[in-house]
Length: 264
Image (tube, rainbow, N blue to C red; front, side, top):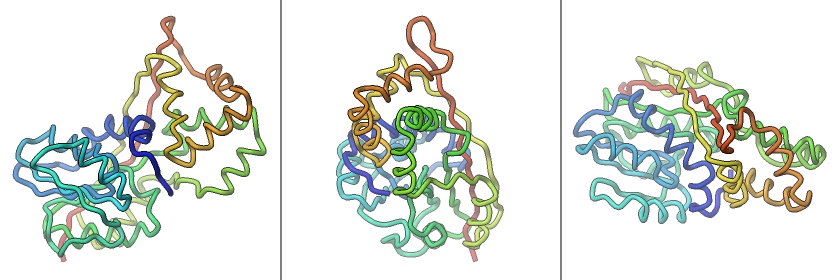
């Protein structure tokens, strides 16, 4: 999946990543004095949360997009972290380099998820932790499913074309994750359901980040809203559930997490 404009992405999906990161870190069991690899570090959401959770960790973030690495370097100014350009499927590190390799919401964007997990296991020392989490795109991310419902109500043919054009995110959950981890030779595999909620102060708080064009979905949203003369935004506003008198509302989200132990 192609990502552009890291600032716009941080406002669009990055705030969800930041909201999820602390519970993912607790699940992964990050400890004192660990050297941790943040795979697919993006705008630095997981790295920031790792540093905030533990003053004694050291973090290396790796991402394939140069602009995102540069953004993270500016956003996370801390001597305990460094960011490098590199792909999850070919991590630029020797074997046994890290105490843990963590990937926050990356699997749906990988060209070869199995290879990436094997790489995460390779660079993690024996007894270290390899963990990831992914959104449940089928039922667990209303902020996007509501958008697609609204888009289909105003331009069904455009939605069908867009969904054919773009690879749909994998909606499978714990079984697929467990199989990936077992296939990479990881042991002591454990899984969890991670739930969260996000409060929006207004419809604009929710909607305006869609218009930044940082992902194929947000670029499509911006173009379709223009083509429909704002009809997409109106349809989506009308669909918002349980809006309070002051215009605020809450949307839930669900992610699946998996962790395993590295070693021969």
